[in-house]
Amino acid sequence: MKRIYKVLILLSMAGFLSQCAQDGDYVHPINHDNIPVVPILFSNAATVGGNPYVVTAWGTTSGGAVTPDPGPTTNIDLVISVAADSPTKIREITKMIGGATSVTPGILQTRANYLAAPVAVNGTTVTISTNLNAYNTKPTTVVPAGERVTAANINALTAAAPYTERAFMFLVTLEDGSTAVTQQFRLRITK
Image 1 (cartoon, helix red, strand yellow):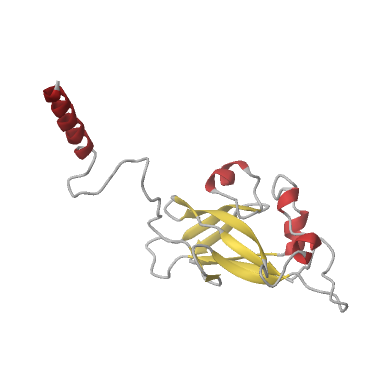
Image 2 (cartoon, one colour; image 1 turned 45 degrees about the vertical axis):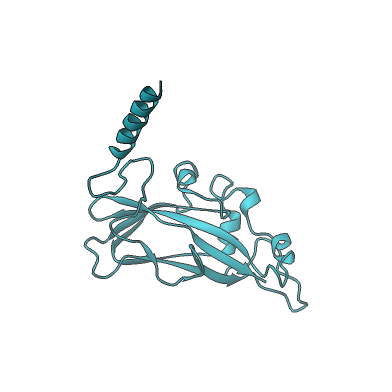
């Protein structure tokens, strides 16, 4: 009986070892990084941690109260680029989704496009401008009502939590026809 266990253990180990490539890298398709060959950059963003962000202020009235929903119309620029020496350039921004910081590539497939139409680029950089008023007035299929920025969100900000965040994700089509889904590009909204 012990011999059978030893044989089974040896066969199991041989099976596990056969899952590795000869150079020692694990190549199973279920567990691998999906990093595009051409990195997509957000050139006007800051970052602390994983997601790049831009800061925008909701705005206040002279009395110190926040402006009423749907917020200000100051433009927020989202600058998307590839390196100048990249082997391929951006053909278009095919799709953009907006919402809470829970947006994911899966939601990119199901949520309606934030853009009225794909944005042609044919270069290394594109700037997409929006504002909180536009964000808050999109149809609920684009930005669900619960993911909008309201005066209540802003009034709830404290010294310990000085901002609230919303996020965008983009489907970028490159000149060679390949596509890349960006990481989240976040808006940090302050009072």
